[in-house]
Amino acid sequence: MRESNEQGFQVITQPSGITEDGSTAWNVQLTRLLRNTDRFAWGNWTLDPTIRVGALGWFNPTDSQFQGAQTGIAVPAVIAVSGSDWHIEQGDVKQTTVGVNFDVPYKDPTTGIEVTVGLQSTWDFGTKGSLTSMGSTYGVEYVEDPAKVMLERYDEILQVAKKYNKATGDKIDQGFGMITKVWLTDGCVNVGSRQDKGEFSITGSVDGVAAMTGSDQSASLKGSYKTTSSTDNVEKRIFPSKTNVVDSEPVAYAYEFTSFAGRVIIPRWVGDVPYLNLWLDNGGSYIVNATVTYKVDGEKVTRTARVSGGLDTQITGIPLEATDFDIRMDFTAGASQFLRVSNPLNTWELGRGHIKLTGWWPGRSGAAWI
Image (cartoon, rainbow, N blue to C red; front, side, top):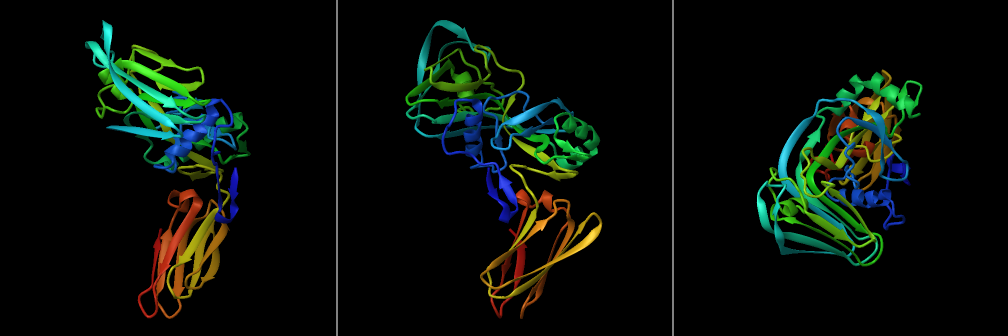
């Protein structure tokens, strides 16, 4: 784990290469790739069906592997169905697709139609650690207000956390929480090469293979395949997991996690957040005197900072349970600016608030959240 304490957070990071053959190492890589487009996503390399909205659990401190508690809770969730695809890879990966003829007519599980022609997609991996993840997205399932739902069920979740030694007294440890958003697929291929020169191929109907590889944009078609083949040095996780079938229920290929920190909720959690941090970034010429007030356990706390033009400063060590922030920024020889936030953990990514200060004398001054 790389520590970034001066910024008020610790992010679970990912190594640059594969250091072991287990699924954890592959999931670390998948998570890193997913965060190029969604910085709060966790990967589900193994396509584990227990990764679902409402699942309770925690993370090991040095990797991206979710440890699910045996107990989950039913939560109100919304499903937004959409026909799309994803295709991510790292390393030396080459995919080719060719048409095939079946000697015996084949009943396509995806369409229910008997077919005599299909597709074969093959992936060649030139180097160890190369991987690909692709498929057709069924949609997204999520909890609309995770904090409200989780706090309403706090006592129930606390008992589960205690069962796994993830609570101290009546406070749940940070890193224990709930999966509150999943990206769903009904056709997916996750493949990586443990050594140089790996190969994997999948063969099936045109529609079935297209849905498996993200080449089909229709949310109504489910992935399927007739056969697969691979070299021994390939790690593969595919959905559906069996040939000649379609799965009635989609599975998550990625998800978001919401953590507790005592009785505080940290949405879109990706690593330990020890405290809140407010960054004042002065891109103008005015000197700014900032006064920040907030409440902790009902008591008002006041912090001050002074930041010259072209510089920045941070107010750190703010307790996670702090609420009702009033931020006054007095610009020397300029106007005063005011910002307010009631619950910063709901809006400050990774517990970090960022205010951009602007204005050049004798012009207008400004302050805005970034």
